Length: 432
Image (cartoon, rainbow, N blue to C red; front, side, top):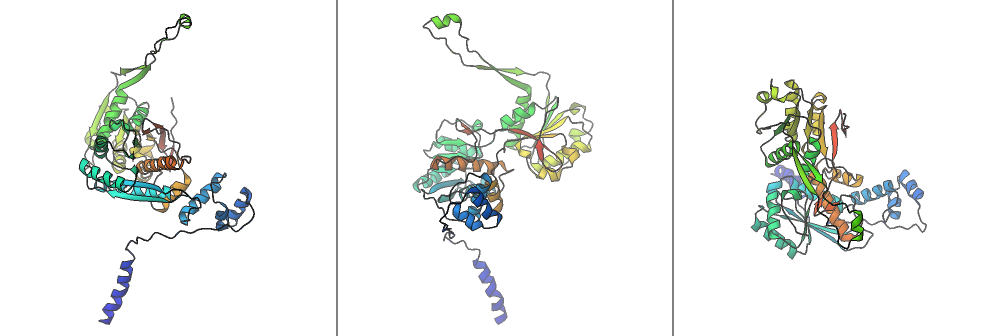
């Protein structure tokens, strides 16, 4: 009996360590006892000699030297240092349909938390989980959030949930890192949309395509939407027409103003362009019926709108069946380092990937990495970071870390074309 108790006791002790305490982690404060000012070279000397606390004692505000400032901010987050700047608490709510968004319920929260701990401001971050995205559940959650005094919300919802919020028309600030304004109609000044623009990426990619274009998509809503964007972009070209009248010499002597007509768009249909679309199921692993000795796809541009594992399978079979592809095109969906390890270089050497994660902040990248989060390749975590950066700047009047422009409630991201090389993604250079 004594032996059983002996073994149970440490198990009980270890079990206690998994309980989450409501007591906040203690803050560390570094007091500067040095009566002298410390210049940039003095700060660097502290760092070179490993005297990190002496450095931090003097680094109580943003530094002009960018490298030193990154070191300052990173150590503040790692060491959980208390804020030396007194300010009002930053309060952010997370609205999370955890059953719909899966892992992003935690990763978007982590991205928001990682951003906030790098700032010298006290903050409160609170999650509100909802069972479904129906209007009733969302309305109840928003009422609770407002009752708790939160006025700024980050909501990684699907299109269904975002549309229900548009219908509710709340008077609190909500940022959608997962939704682009193209996906719905909203005129609310309180709603901000942060998702990347798949349509703009498709239009840019189709400039590199040759006929015929062969599109491989899965049967998901995203796959079908991407295929529609790409077909339209390849079959039609939109031209801007400037219909404004040029003022004549006589108009300068006339009291009547020349009426300025708005510019119009002309859509040109390319009848010689051909698009072939294949929608493949998750279970499909053999593409022989689509690729082997298929004369319709000779010298085609192939567009892949499938998750990374399926994309690797498609690309390997393009090589297996000796398909003479001109190039392989993909949107953000395949901007993933796994592509480099899952495929052979011969399979991806002619691939072009559109990417909108074009701005990186070293401190935030490292802070996210410390808690197992990715904002370098995962665009939803990246756009969530853009959202909290926007709110933080709005609440504190501090400069934004990410200079992403906002237009009509939508974040506008640059798009770059990349190629997966031997070990990394490199800039794509168009060759005539």
